[in-house]
Image (cartoon, rainbow, N blue to C red; front, side):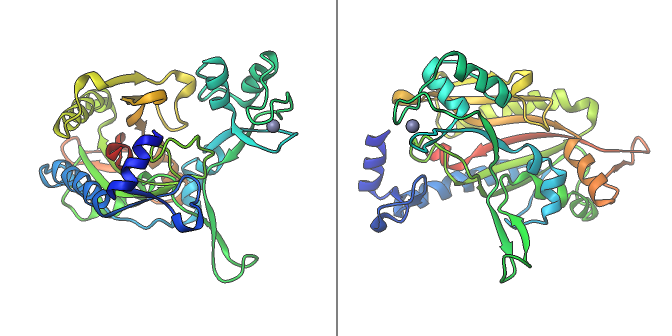
Length: 331
Ligand SMILES: [Zn+2]
């Protein structure tokens, strides 16, 4: 990966962020060729899923949203990374990554208590100083917080969005009111998201700020499983369209205890990255059920149900969510 990063710098695709100041970890800037590559990916995606389809409309929402959005979405409570600190050298690690690296076990989504138990039982040492002085695993929220208003004490604490999805739920009612859409339909958005993660580097694979191309596709609840399959096919077609060979892609189903708090089924499209990286998530597809619309309906007091004219009834649609990482596509 270092070779690829060096080549990308020489050719003007991607530079280390803040390079003349020695860089800032896990930030990268797209150079003259990189920005064209990235723009091509996004333009093709937008043409494919928005312009060439009658059932998907676009949205370009703000990065800052009302803090209640993240309460309702569950991100304030559940969007956490399990971290451990070393009491000797004060280094900080992702507990699940440490276990995977040291013991080859996939513990993503397991509880901090379970991870702590594994670390203790296997006597895992600090990878930096070699002492057996790791703390218990604890959950840390991954959202970047900032303040609206000049004074920290009197201002309103807000978050940089960790996913583009929520704006598409929050604007669901306004988009319905434009009268151009009928279930099944989708809302598409391309935009920056921010996650305050401890990352193992890997160039532009895992970034503090990155770009997502995401669709929230609203369907009748009983049609969600079928729509999930259709979207899996559409994502395969997209992969072929951008020239990725089938043998470099595999699909991995998430276990029940690995699923995000909003999801009833999730699959990852994994790509065989070069060198030590191996199979890693490229894109994701999730059945978010009616979790988000229901949460926002309760939290805001607005009726977010869809009125189905053919069936003459109201319901909260289910949501199928295909997510595509822009930076990972470029990588
Ligand atoms: Zn240490």
